[in-house]
Length: 303
Image: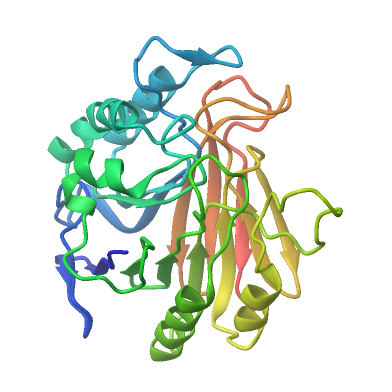
């Protein structure tokens, strides 16, 4: 629904576009000795509940997010932006969930960290806008969708919205958002593009009588991507599984959850992303520093 078009440079955060520009999510930092304009912290599936003491699957979700926020603030070179890629709230996107979330991320404002959010199937745009008022749009760009563009030195980041109905697992981009995405990608064809949305691509339809669990218009989405070779990666969450794969030359990056896991033994945490000319390097920061994948680094190279 809102569009945040933000250009990042060593001199500072500059916002501007032919489209109307809404306020940034949380705080404004100046790119300088303490900030890295090419670094982004990637989070997903925080599932913050209404009260800090609530747990699920043996995990205190509030405590996990507070731990991650503390780690981000302690970084010697802070990221230019923090992207929270959906399922920010626990189950139904309640106002109390977002009030707790706002308290968790409040220290980021004082630390100059900008927060950008996408919508997951457990989110609700209205209560989120009420709790985090700087996410509320000034101008509707895509009806009933929350979309953003972050323009950085080495790539343009497109934050998309796959929420269709609160607490319904199915994701969808929709024709209007796909048309908007195609237009904005064509307008920025000179630079690599990285797309973000909460839901995983689902290339095979579900069995009859069952719901889509990923993006139900995956075929249309990937047809659009295939026609635009500047798109180098799609970043998603939803499955609570850290993985990196490729399909037809496109990197598919599945972020780990900050909250709980669906399968024992997998890592939860966040991903430290460094953009560079010709690619991006990702480093897993597990909640458990003793996890065997903690500190795993993967260098992605653009074709």
